[in-house]
Length: 308
Image (cartoon, rainbow, N blue to C red; front, side, top):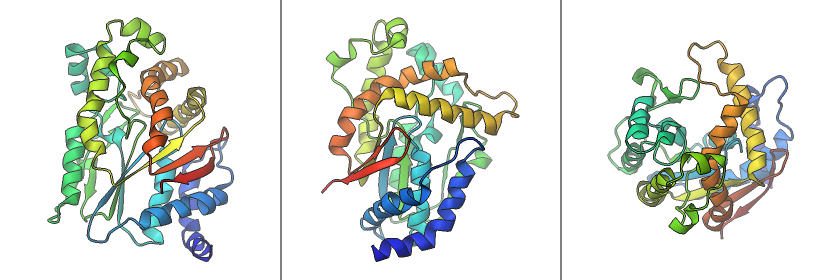
């Protein structure tokens, strides 16, 4: 407990500064100190214990849309850097989305639904795998990685990409479908929602997405040193949280030209593309996750279970 208190005193200011940057006038974080002290500092001790100064470890962090993956992974990064003095690089799988142009080609050649970013098959997984190989290589050289702007639904210009100049001790890859396993083909047959029933009658989209999970994504997931999962109660709750997230994105980007911010109806339709994998992960991810952070209905961490 003494070490936790010592850590809290050292990281509190930076963590609170980050949390404040994520708040809006009407949406404030509650029980910040409890989240940091009772949950995220102990989680960081667990991660730091696995770190190796000479070898990069890769952490996968997943959770449904709106669960707070970016916030939680960012606070863990602050703690690991500030208290444990580790070099941490954090990136979202969203930054590896294929360009609008590439998704247009996919939508014409395979299925129209692949124009919509999100599902497995719409990320450049080869780029992620090559990135993992480079950071694990003893002879490290600087790396440039894409940055995706959701308000434009495309990558930013190359001069604004991430630059990694020093070999990280820890890499955190966060994303809603990170760590997801494929389903059995028989389980794909019954449509899970209106979108699948009306827009994927021949199962072409579902099979393509599932096949991606069974191949490239599986290769990527095998490269994780450990896997963290944020578990929400149900999909309805995620919808509520995701709508709140889009509202924040709107407030941040409302003055941007050609903004691709979604309406409420568009968010609900968008989430239908995520529903099958998200609900599959509710059941499967806790079985193999190294750490499960369970969230309550108020969007706060209720408990953490560590794999022995």
